[in-house]
Length: 470
Image 1 (cartoon, rainbow, N blue to C red):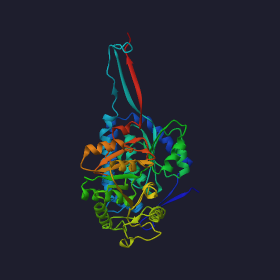
Image 2: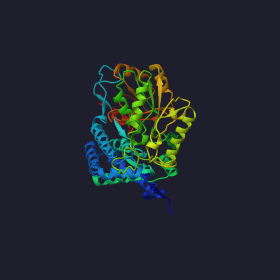
Image 3: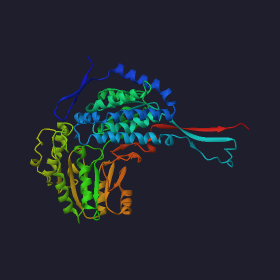
Image 4: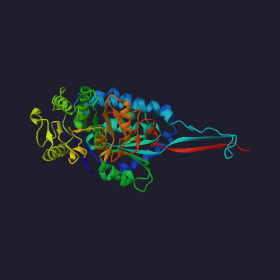
C-alpha cells in the first residue's frame, strides 16, 4: 500500500486534503512523458507557447477568489491578503511571457570582414537552446508566486516541467495542472508529482531531469545539491534570508515605520525576503521604536478566514515554538520585549497562533539577530553611523535583500554597492519586481530567476558559425 500524505490546515487542524504519494512507476511515467513531450514543445513557436501560457493564467485569474481562500486554508495567511498572491502570480507570469521573445532571441555577432579567420560570406550567432525536463520544487509560504518564477519561464524557454509542491500546499500543483490542461498545453509538457523527500532526491538524480529549481530551506538546498552532485546538471537555489533594514537619520519616519511594519509581519513573517532585523540611527531611534511598537499593536491575530484578521497563525506548532524559543533566548540574554501578548488573546502558548513581537536591547550574540526566524518577530538595534550599520548588515550568513531608508539616493547607491546581498531597496522592502533579477548570495542561494537574465539558466547557448564556400 502506498504512503498517504495529509494537508493539515494551520487554521484549525482540519484535514484539507489527503493524497497518495507517487511511487517509482508514477515517477518513471512522468519523466518519460516529459522527455517525450520535449522535442515537440521546444519546436513550438514562441508565440504559440505564449498564447497557451496566457490562457492558463487567464483560467487561474478567473478562479482567483476560490484559489485565494484555498491558500488561506492550506497555509494560514489572512483571507484579506491572499488575493494579492493571485494578482502577483498574474503580474509575474504576464511579464515573463512578454519578455520571452526578446530574451530568447538569437544573439547576432557583428561581422568583421577584416578578420583573417572570418572572411566575407559568413554569419555568426548564438542561440538559446532549451535544456529538457525541468524539475521545480516549490515551498508553501508563497505557493503560487514561488512556483511561477520557474514554471512559466521554463515553459516559455521550450522546456517541459515537472512540479513537486510542498505537501502543505499540494493543491497548488493540481491547480496549475488543471489550468495548463484546460489551456491546451500538450500532454507531458507540464506535470506534477506528490513526493516524499527520498523520492524527490531520486527524481533530482534522474538523468532525464536536466535542471532543478528549488525554493526552501538551506538544509533542503544542500540536500538537492548532494543529489545532483557529479551529474552535470544545473541547480538553482533560493534559500531565504535574514534581511536587514537600515533607517538613516534623514529617513521619513512615518513612511519608514508603516512600510517596515508591513515588511516584518506580513504573512506572519513567513517570507523569504521579509525584514528580520532593523538598524536605526541613534538620532531617531527612540521615536522610531515608539511609533513602530504602536503600529504593531494595531494587528489583529485570529482566524485567517475572518475578514478583519490581519495576522494569521504560523504554518505549524513547531515553527511557532522555534520563534518563541528565539524570543526567550534573546530576553534571557538582555533583550527587552515591547509587546505584551495579553494584547493578542488568540496567542496561546504551545499553539501556532503567535503574537507579533518587537525586541530592543538586542545584539548579534542573540540568535534572533543572526538566525532566520521566519516568524512575526524583529529585533531593532541602535547604530551610530553608516559604517556600523553596514558592518552589522553584512554580519550574516544570508544575503537575499537589504533595504535602506533615506532621502539620499546617491548615499543609498554607495552603501548598496558595499552590501553583500542580491537586491538593494531604497524606501521599499519585502517586494519582488519581475523586471529585476532575483538572486541571493551566501546561504541565500545561487542562480537567478525572473528578468531577462532568468532565461539564461533555463537555456544553454549554442553557437553557430555559417560560412559560404570559396
